[in-house]
Image (cartoon, rainbow over all chains, first blue to last red; front, side, top):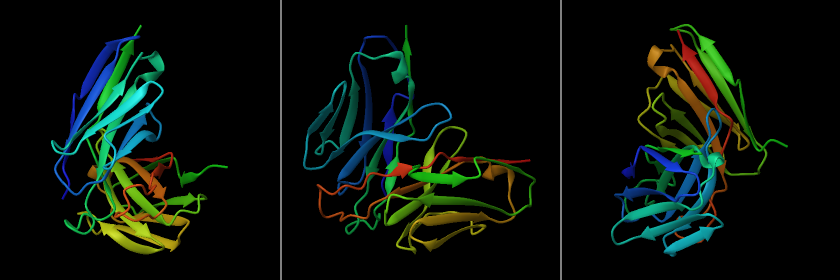
Length: 117
Length: 119
């Protein structure tokens, strides 16, 4: 099945700096890669996603890049603000036909981002 | 107008008891999921139902039994609760789409979670 690794596990940045979180996946048939933000005590919420037919996607201060050859994807947050502090999860949707993974998401282990004033 | 709701929000119970968590979505989605998030924040899928049919069943003890009376509801029943079952359980839903279509939309929307504490 799919295996997703996420780094770093914790990340501390100064307000206004950029933050980068990286993930790798194992199933070459994976074709959908969402990123979720989870604030303390809250539910995970989708912040951006990317599909295998696209190499980069941007939404205001957030961007995601995908390298299918290397099987890794990254989240970039620019001009970080204190409200960006949260746990961020990457995920990958595994192959349905080739690997029998089903239409399911495998999540990374999460990155605790802290934006300091 | 809550999209995905769960009850109860908190559940504290003794070892050996049986308990249920309920989930409802009003998004008209075809697929619903149960996830377990442990104390280290790992999010792991447990089950997935599509139109009341079980499609994903991860390696979960058979003390856990999901039930979907209709496509808007997915409940989780847990028998003989153990200390290790303590976690936050999240329900989620998504519109069923084709894996083969890379442009398909299948965003998963999560419920608020149920914090289960087994004493």
